[in-house]
Image 1: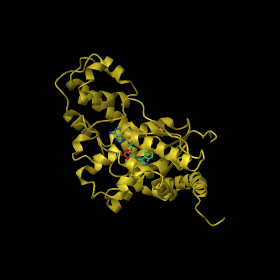
Image 2: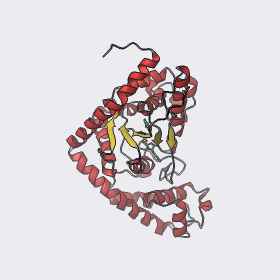
Image 3: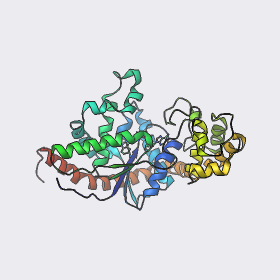
Image 4: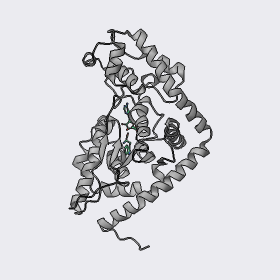
Length: 340
Ligand code: AMP
Ligand code: TRP
């Protein structure tokens, strides 16, 4: 096989399965913005992924717009990035099916996120939830994306994407799909739940107090940080001192990511500080960074027509990239298509 060089291209996505959290912002959106301009960037609201668990139809449409509003309000620019929702480009589902026939059941059985989500209920969850990583591989490879910025929880899915690309290339003896790199770096790759530092902060956790939503107002943000679980010790002198203190480490990492610093720099500045000092400082910083974003999200959500027009235009651009790649895939697999 000849080595093909692929144009550097970024793809990533967020599910509209609930309101955006600080974990989505720091682990994903803020980094999406940072990659704009350096390479071609494609960012998607992955609505087909959201329906792997039940979604109320009206709420799903609303959340799809809200994630798009979060993208725009955080600085993603439709003139610099392609912004769209997944279901508007049918090629995702089409390539997803082909990848269902490439991926092996044994590979899917190793996906830890599926095991966590399905729990003891594995017989009752949707087939879509199980097959989801192969649709995610299709999202990425449909654009021959070379780089995928994601939080730590998605690392295994990007590795599976590489396995699918490699098996496809091997089976069809073509160097057709790139081996995509996950981009997982910085202090905020796994923002934890504010009430339990061993669990990820997620959109769907039981209590609203365990997460910061991108739409929370200043009072809510201050209250949630004030009530965040910590330990009785002040902040340590070195990073080492955070080792067995998940809640303390999480708050330091949130501060570092919001302020574009390393955790080390935060520790150096706040060594010996108690929570009575650190928590309000952190809350002020979060309000300073998030309130302009939530104000812009509210403005955009007031006029969904603007969001819808941006997504429609983005979908058109996405289709123009995706369709030739899907066409070549059909050709390689041997699917007979009408000429023209
Ligand atoms: P999801 O909300 O599951 O669709 O996730 C969308 C993106 O946000 C993915 O790249 C996730 O890895 C990232 N993400 C979600 N929650 C967190 C978190 N608590 N910490 C860091 N990244 C996160
Ligand atoms: N599976 C991702 C999540 O739950 C969302 C996602 C779907 C995604 N397709 C993607 C992320 C493609 C990056 C690239 O967070």
